[in-house]
Length: 445
Image 1 (cartoon, rainbow, N blue to C red):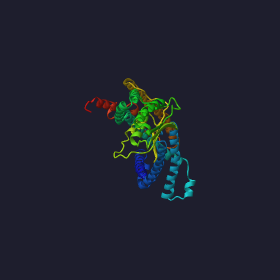
Image 2: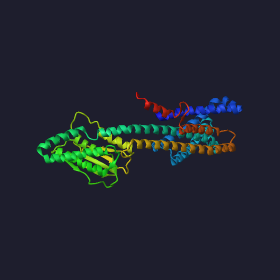
Image 3: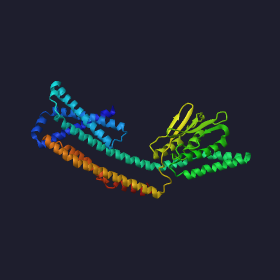
Image 4: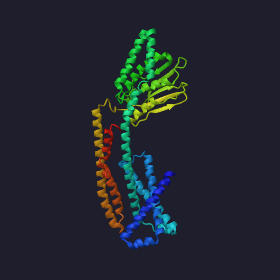
């Protein structure tokens, strides 16, 4: 309801501005029509507002329907054709409804007479105005969409370092290392041979950590092998209190997941559940619907301090950086499972600083080229469509309605040009980049 009320107010404001624009135009171009409007000002204003509100609301509702359906991404050729076609159809319906209200309800003309006198020419001017405003709305939303995307990209870039830091911080729980050393100390006295095996497994764990810490993705088979080594350590600590099932290898040899994610999930299972010989912990790793699932029976420890959930959040953040696929967590009264998406390709492995900078420069250059292509496409369309509209205007009516799409689209084209060429009319060219560099160079910032 708040959205509808807000749009209704906008429709009222836009309708008033359009009406005043017409009044100003006729004051300059045709004083006789201007005097006629002034003599019947409120009636003309009411008629105008009915048209403005009806046309604005039907087009606004269509626009928000498209945003909801396509999750905000409507700027493809197919979707824009659908959007504009919908605007034209709904504008025709809106004009009919508005004319019905004005002519029948406000001016008292019988419905039969109204229908008999309806002609296509009566719909042309309102539809063109409604379509022009809709295109301006799409242009404004596209500009907003691009700006939000830029902010999102910067957040992702800034968040990558933080996510990687958290990944390193939480790769191996300090409690696991402390407990492992305690187990090693007791094994040295009780069973030196077992202590030697434990030390070998522990060294493999840390070697894997060092090898994989800078990788975004590793193969599922690598993670499965590491998980077996890691569980071997856990079994030495908990003996038969852990029952572990894991496949020998992945069905897709090239499938990849986030490194050390299995270790975090296995450590969480042990950390948050009771693990005793009378109540063994059953952990199962298996593939399902393109995901690697880690599942365990739920027998939570009764602890005062609530879990921070840092481990799961760490895995989610790393996946969010690399892919749109989501990590799924499912909890019931008896089981807890986490499904890790298996990805088809590796995003990046051990990027050097030079490679990272070069990639960012390439992406920035590509983005600039795409912006220029979009602008030149917009300019080409403007140079083709606007002359056609002026020709149509000259062939249909003496009212110069073509001035509205010319000025409206021209304004949008100017904004597009400023964005494409990176020029800010208030703060100058490349102001944003210069200011960012200034803050980066400021050691006290």
